[in-house]
Each structure stands twice: as C-alpha cells, then as structure tokens.
Image: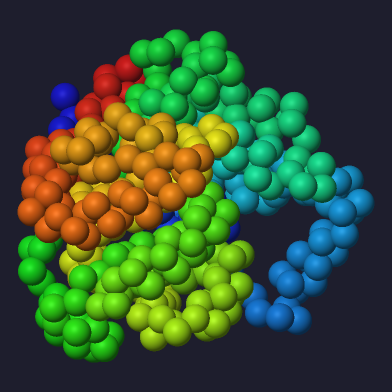
Length: 402
C-alpha cells in the first residue's frame, strides 16, 4: 500500500491573512506537518496573487456589486459561473502535479475542484473548516445576495463527491449531520492546535521594546476587534482594571476588525491610555512572543449564535502556559476545565469578567497553576503534529477506498 502521498490542496479564501487568518494558519500548519511526515503538498491558493489596488479592474468589478440590488440579482450567478473559468486553471494544475489525493477547502458555490477530482478519479477530502453555509447565510447575506438553496445545493453536492469531510469542531459536525443527514462515519473533527514554544522566549526584551516595566503585570488579548469578541465588554474591563491596578498594562495583539478605530478613540479619552498597547498586525510565527508577556489571557466571546469555531488563540494561549479567561461555549467548553485549565465567565452577568480577571491578578500562584495545566493539555493532545496525524489517517482511508 502507498505510504507517502502527493497531495493537492485547493483554497478559495478571499482574505488569507486578514479575517481568515485562523483558517489560513490551520491549513499551513496541517499541511506543513504532513510534509514533515514525508508527504508532498502542492498548494493552489486561489486568491494569493489578487492584489488589485484602487482603480484597477478588480476594484471596478467589486464596486459594481456594492449596490444592494445588483448584489441581490447578480452575485450568486456570478459566483456559480466563476467555477467554469476557474476550472481551466485547476485542470492545468492537476495535470502538472498529478496528485494522489486532493483536499479542497469548501466555500460558497465552489464546486470546480471537487468535480475535477471525480473526473480524474482522485480521492477527495473536503475541508469544511467552519459551518460554511451557516457563515455565508448568517454573516454575508445582508443584501439578500446569497441564494440559500443554491449555497446548500453546491455544498451538499461537493460532500457527496468526497470520500470524507473534516471540520474544526463538534458543533460544526453536528450542524452538517443534522442539515444533510450525513453518514456520521463520513465527517470527522480535526480541531485547531498550536506549536508550543519556550514560554520564556524574548519576554524581557519585548517588554522593554513596548515600554512596559519589567515587574508590571499584563492582561492580553490576541485577535481582531470584531463584534463576536465582545469588544464593548472588553473596553469596560480595560477601564475598570487599569483604574484599579495602576501598574497593569493591557496589550492587544493583532490588527483590524470593524470596531478597531472606535476602540482606539475611546481609549484616548482616559488617563490610562498609555497603558493600552496596540501592537498592530503581528506575523503568526512571532505572535507567541507577545502571548508570553501575558499574565492573564482573554478570549471574551459572545455566548449567542452557533459557536462552531475552534479558536486558534485558545490553543496558542494554552500552549504558552497562560491562564485564560473565556466563555463557556462550543468547543471551548469541551477543551477547558473551569478552575483547572482556564476560567469561565458569564458575558450575561454584569461585572463577571472583571471579577474573574481581578481574581487571577490577585492570585499569581493560581494563574500559574492554571497555565501549567493548560500547556500540558496541548502538549498531550493538541499540537499541530497531532492534528496532521489525524489528517494523514483520513488520507490513508480515502486512498484505500479508491
């Protein structure tokens, strides 16, 4: 039986290192660790080279579809027809690399690579990284431009062409099983993970660079300032703890999000503004150095909606041995044991987040114990090598089916 594969990976995300960074990290880490197992991976990043600036043809096309009526009438047909154009490039890619297995990250209306896998008799794995159809219909359908029946049709169509599907959480798996009545043996959970680094790396030097006193405690948040990160609650927390703890600093690692500029403006009005540090976008391979500064790490997710995520930040906080305060939702509730490997707060209880943060700030031994327990969980079960071995197992199974 074949033990090493040539794998073709197809990804259609529009924004690889912006709002999609978590999914991009997962793809890169999974496939890099597959290569470390001796497999060969060829990447088809659909949007990697699309950098059309203002005034370019791409910008003109997008501006046409900004009008709500035009988006409602033409967006879905346009996306479906794009597959026919894309198929030519994908066909050449497959002919050039002759993969043993194809992995396709599903996206709305994307069927071309899955069809080509079937036509070339290549075993197909579908990466349904989130609850994709839910995400498009709930978050990207403000103008009614997403035709629900067509999104569901193409998603289900690609699933039927595949040997197996992998998703990032049990919630996402349940969503798809219930929606399409899938055979549960066909769909698998491969969560996100992390690469544990030395917790002491670059801490003191980076503190100096950021203007933080060596003995000052640090609360930290990594990610975009988006509505699902409870930014209103996060600002309320910052105001209270920086007022009550004069030596405390708050570090926000990352850039972007629709609330980012307003958040910064709000901070500028307070006397503690110099103790809130916005790092801006940080390369993923260096993010752990900033996480190492944290005494308390925050992931204040909202508790509403279908929480199908597998937050990369949670695994990276844990990998670096940080005491996390987060919400008891979705996969996070399965991963963390309250009081032992993290602390849960209730976003619907006023003041609960602030109380939990103060608890850990006042009890360094407690937060260090929680951090050690969290790191041990990642080392045993959730490194990217663990995840790549799960994916390798699916590759072997798909190849045997073929």
